[in-house]
Image (cartoon, rainbow, N blue to C red):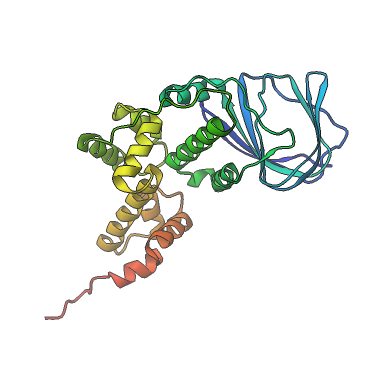
Length: 290
């Protein structure tokens, strides 16, 4: 038996926790904090044996397959017993976060989620959960716009597939005006480091988060977090071209990357070559030929 390995991201709107426990105490019963919040639990590996109580009533005894998703309400006085090794990602979403999204979508507030007690097979949420794992492992490299994008996608999918709510109003959303698109691009370009959120950009454009995200992708062909990466790489190319003596670590810092390896990974993925190779190919000769 050993303590679980935990990786965590926190904000006012959600908490994401990856918990891995190769050797849990099979007899230990854990009291889960009672909150007005929902938990979306994604199994990253097969989980052979688990028990879950609602109050004093045993609600489930069994296992979960890799990729399965459970969505319990955390106000049900939950207690659990981990009887085998497990590895899962848990998104804890306060009711206020989901209510805010539903208001933006023109739908009624969520009551509860319906799902199979042994977990529902859900490749969409499983894939989105996998996309969050690098940010949990390396918080210093996280892209806040990307995290916002994934969270919005998870919540929207969960509400539409599992929520006991009315469907969205069906209203069409207008495209971004040229002024709104300019505001969004300028904000991203001036905040190449961490910290800029979808909510902040949407507020500056006088739009909801979901409306802005859809309209920005429609206007540019990419999501806001991808546009941010493009701007970081574009700035890196400028520095590589204009400052041949500047180190790659300094360029990474000035462009909002966590470190030189982070710059190299993103730059290579988006351009097809490393920063060093790109710099060498665009190096200006010291003595131009006459």
